[in-house]
Image (tube, rainbow, N blue to C red; front, side, top):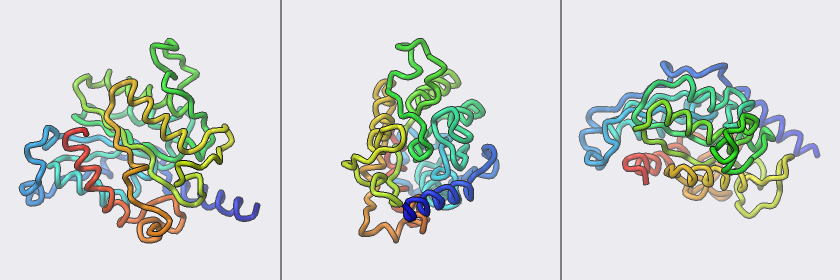
Length: 258
């Protein structure tokens, strides 16, 4: 019990340490290095030279994440603007939610929805891919599930710019308890769902809308044997080394959307 309480306190402290009251895109805008962009292997890709907006929680916005986003900017000759806010999730009541973030964003060529761990750790219902869709008449009450929030974000962005490319990054693994990194764990949160259920819910919502998904949970390449190299002491957030590891994978995905 003491270990559990200590881990929970560490998570809450870390989330608060990275929390922002609202998005600050002006402070989180990255420009490409012209020399790096000139020699990029993605010059002929469809998304080279586009503007990218990123939405998420602390994993998308804290300073270490710039290591990955600068890789995107340089390889794709892209301006990368981050609206993420620490503690945010997709559920309407999970911090400064991604729902609020997409509402405030301008028009971009590419929108990246970067899933966090906050809906799971914040005990918000996972929901199903049907939440807040035409199938339930866009039931407003479903906006406080992870899946309802994802569907709301996708719908809002498509209404904002029907020609935009929308891409989804699944949750990354976290290592302060076994449920966050073992896809076969049967340990649920208080809603009765496992972290793997939340990741699958993310994929299901995107499948419904035909949104390309980067399965970071399975492509991250980080495990209990190398985690200390790539994660901060809280075992929830990554070091710059972790972002440098995943950044080229993200850039390759963003180049063409697959």
